Image 1: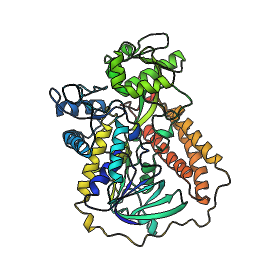
Image 2: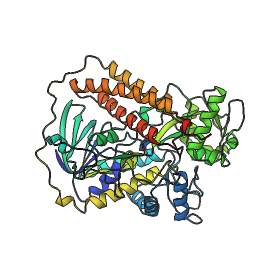
Image 3: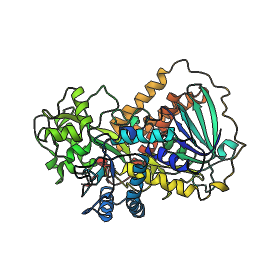
Length: 518
């Protein structure tokens, strides 16, 4: 199969890119489940953008850099935030309608770390709504081919032509990807002039996460194996408040906007503790709130803390947070009458595949956009609701940059077919599934909210053991999604641990007790 553009992933970044690229060229979207299944689907909060006075670009820029602890690339922050209103208009023109107040103005939420209300939303299920609107658009576009239940195995480079490729080489080129057609159980090669990685996050390498099961870091792992540069992998954002339910995965996210509306955190015995950790209390940045909850749970031995919204007007709860109200009610909690049991959960990675301002990776003809990319916007921590914004801005930038030279790219027809010689179907899948569970527990127990050198080194040894065992299986086993996900998750876990060990200061989302100065 041959296309001008190959987009791997079907969240907001991939779909926005595909819609723009389809105006000029033929596009193929590869997604490992249904097109609607993505991290975007689960995003509750909204999209941050300067909309009206007294807010302004400088305030949003400074909020982003303050939360990112100054590790952000300022020129990227300025570019993204100043471009935000135009990209919001793109969504509106595609049919996305954000909530408005009784006067017809956008109803803007204020979330932790923001100095002004600036979060556009659709009730408390913004991502779900945007995903559905964009999916419908993509499905009706004749220039877009959608391959659902197709798992991208590897991006294709000179390596697959027998050439030695090393990280840092300036002339590595991407020619497309090898893809597993899961339903027909065959591996196809898709050649493309431009390949775009939009595979989302890594949350499912942790046991408790807000991410869907598909979030196994596939794009990051594929690009790392192809010798692309990665950056800031140690910065994993844990959402402070997810509904406590040990048997449910993914964890149901209780939006930060509820705390923005006045909900308060307290211990099971009723003590409001955030005042002990930060003057901003519940509206402190997510890393501070998550660490505060983690500290309280360690001190008390309790399994959860409580988020109390009972003092908020019932009509406001039901109108602005209908999905949270409904989901909590299903779990047995009427949040207008009783507090919500909550725990932190792995939520978002600020690092990923290193890109420039266009979304271009260190491999030619290969772009990365959305959560899998490290653009420099977030620095050491992500300001709430900047993620969907980053996705739509870099989808646009990557498209604009790619059309400037795509006509000069020639398809490489020498790429060989996938070679399965010497492999066989596994006799049992239970080993692969158990290895994945083992990895999740390693990451949750040793590479979580608060870390130590001892735990990080222990986790590195354990992950290396899993890597050796998994590679042995991979060499002799026919491709399956579970095997590829395990392999990718191990690659990503390794990168997170290595970056964490190399970070010798506590900053943003990375907190190591051995970095604390006496």
